[in-house]
Each structure stands twice: as C-alpha cells, then as structure tokens.
Image 1 (cartoon, rainbow, N blue to C red):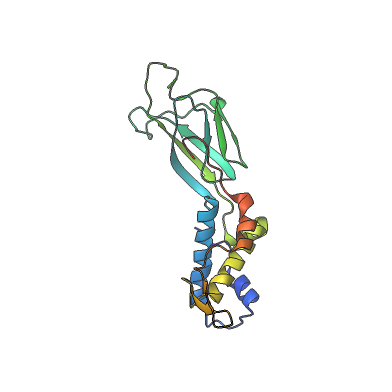
Image 2: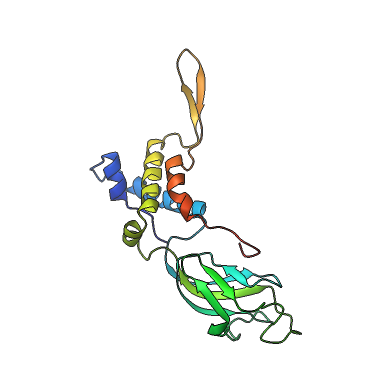
Length: 205
C-alpha cells in the first residue's frame, strides 16, 4: 500500500518546520490515504493482483477493482475451483479497456464453458492482472495531483481537529450552544476525488 501524499507536503501547508510532530503526521497521512481508497473504492498502489469476481450466466463484461490496468496475465474459470490447473481463456476471446478496468468477453463463460454447453461452471471467474494508480507515492503525486491534494487537505483537517475528532459542543455567541460534528471527508477533498470513484456494475461490482 502507498500513501497519497507525504508529511513534508502537509507540514508545508501547516507551516511546521520541526520534526516534533512527524510521528503523528505520518499516522494522519496514512489514515487520510486509506480514507481516500475507501471513498474512491479503488486501491492506489499499482501492483500485480489475482482476484475472483462473481459472474452471471449471461454476463460477458467484468469490471476490475484496480485500474488503470497495466496488463492482464490470465483469465480463468474452473469447474472444480482449481484455478491453478485451469486453462487460461484464449487471448482472442477477450479485450479490455485499460482506463476503466472493463473486460469484455466474446462468449458467455457460464453458458459455454470451454466450448461445452452442457458443462456447468461455477459463478466465479479469476483474473490475474496488474492495476492501480501508481507504483510509488512520488509517481502518484506527479500523475494524479488531485488525489494528492485531497490527501493534503484531509490530513490538514485531521491535524486541526486532532483534539476533537469525534466532535464537541462549542459556544457560538449570545449564550447559545452549537455542536461541531465528527470529522469526515471534507467537501474540497470529495470534489477532487469524485471523478476517480469506481462505478459498480452488474454482479461483480
């Protein structure tokens, strides 16, 4: 797993020059990065993955969880769930869109398992591929500055609310009392991240 930003970037926004708070800022940057992954529903790190996806009988499209996709090494379906022994789908039987993580199959795997309409395949397909935004935090910052910015301002918000992350009562003047709610993903971060949210489709969303 990689972080979406660095503590040096956050310290610059907070005008902190000492190393006294590096440990807590490191924790906050990591927490902000994980919150971003949760919000966009996609992992940040680009790495090799082997994942299984449910698939319906007349389904011929799969949306991978991690994208952009750098490469797909195999797509398999196994009657006995023994994917290690299963034969890869022929490369001519599928195509994929690297930017969206969409795989399009040229046949219905469940209804036509390895060319046999009588064979009943399980409703799970396995894909081995490489996907994700970047291989390092430095590359993520360069290639996806909006994601890094969202991490920066979320970490800053966490720092400024470090003594009351769950909210507290506050005086608002005239003797009345208001309530400052629990810290959530801040609006500017949400706006920066929304274009990167993973869309869910069909059974494998």
